[in-house]
Image (cartoon, rainbow, N blue to C red):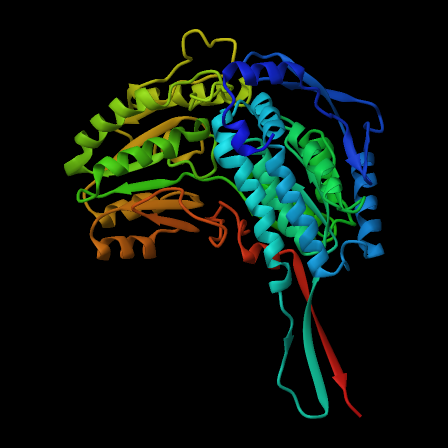
Length: 503
């Protein structure tokens, strides 16, 4: 069933399909599904009700080693790394189409695994993931070498080559999409991949691996190992035959991966880490539009987004009006509910542990003196799940923990400011620098703010817009990689200079 057909399904249809699903839970190594070598498993939990979905392979260093050896064998054989560019393009085009055709399957797996609303899967995650592979495929024959000007007796050219084996470690907030962002440029440039999905949301990774093979991908090129960070992710990062780690996740783990690279073989590491995105709303902004984007920017995907617009910086002269509009609209649009209901805009958080973390931050906000405008608890009738109400604090100061630390949940903080200079100063007073936005009708104000904001992405009079030409990545401790763009392809290659002396 393709995307358009899937969008016609109702709540009962989705629950019926979910009741019948039997996900593949083994590792995928060298083109085959295999159990963990020690036959250990861990439980995959449905955050809606706390029930066990499946027992998933719990891998360790021995499983990682088998996956890396499989990837290296495939790479050295040239079956993928030296495949004609147009042939590799064809495989990834077919892969992209297969993702679209299996929209229902991917939606079922990610909704069950992390509580994402099914409408988000069908409108964003599935089409966005397919588009990522399509775009990277289109870029394959756009990577060029170079010939330099030399003396007549010399000839010098530079070629780009794949790195080898790339370890991709991805988070749980966008299981399918984040895996796509990481593995697509690695595969497109001829590398082999070992994918380590988050233990909270492992299931869709196996379907990706299976479909890659169906698309014509050779065995050993895309491998999947499941497990916990200490037992699986760390051995992958320390492995001496892994040439690069591509990571999205917390800043804390990103730093560890860079240490592991230094402790092992100095492998390359690209990271996309935490964020505390400011949205600057000037007094001359289109307030109606700014409020709508601000609401979606923090409550979309349950606030479990690295660039969630959690700091709402509002000019004092429109502060009260903004607060009033935000409060009235947010309460009606984002109401937690059944993620298999196509009308639901907010599902549960990924785990009970994440729920506790967010609720603890809400209590911290209260103790710090911020004013709780709405939310702050668990929705009535949804106590079995990992739900948290959409929450808004006002009267927040930028030195408060709820303004400085990444909460990764549906918690917004409103901070007033006097002028654009103060707003930029507040916005930049953060260890993060992933994204920012500024709302103003004054082009000078917007340009100056965009120039001065310390963020890898700056939106003007919008939020979360973009396409595959847009580089995605941050400043400061939000990481140093770039995803979802042509540059991400180059980050999975290395250059070789060839100098020929002509007799």
